[in-house]
Length: 97
Image (cartoon, rainbow, N blue to C red; front, top):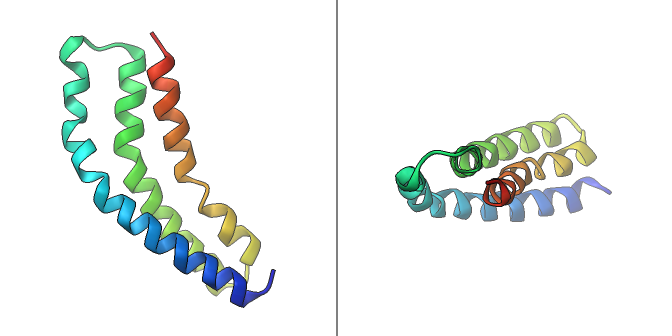
């Protein structure tokens, strides 16, 4: 893909992740209540997934624009899949006992 298409994708995903970062503050504040029924491995995975999402989203925004600036257009788009690790971890944590 060319630079213009990649730049448009980066703008859209940056705005989306920015909104999701702000929206993740409430779940982060409520995440310690996961341990009210006792700490299990699944709850720890879920907890760290919730806390890691805004961090991974911010890292992906910064890294994607850095890669775009240096001409690595394909890698810049792939970096935006990094927060998916947190989302996958969230569902894995809920499926663990």
